[in-house]
Length: 128
Image (cartoon, rainbow, N blue to C red; front, side, top):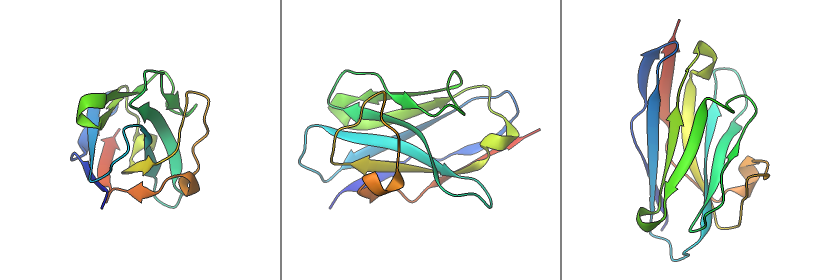
């Protein structure tokens, strides 16, 4: 049974930073895709960033976070990190970690349907 353990989110003021982590366990594949989605109040779930764990290519970042958020990985620990800088009130959302058993690359779009396993979500609040 695949499990995704997300770190706690938090509350920051605009311009601040937060770092999320997500550790995967209970799977047998050595390579897989992991990503972060978010769901803002009243909005659909959207892909934020993804990266191929077990590989060495860069990650994909949505245009809305490019230049502010960075996804990275620890292949040995099957863990991905989302460093979020220059946070804005519009980044306030529930953030979800997700895992796909398939490949993803820097040019991959993120569709929720592509991902097989989901974390429970962690809340990020940015105040102005």
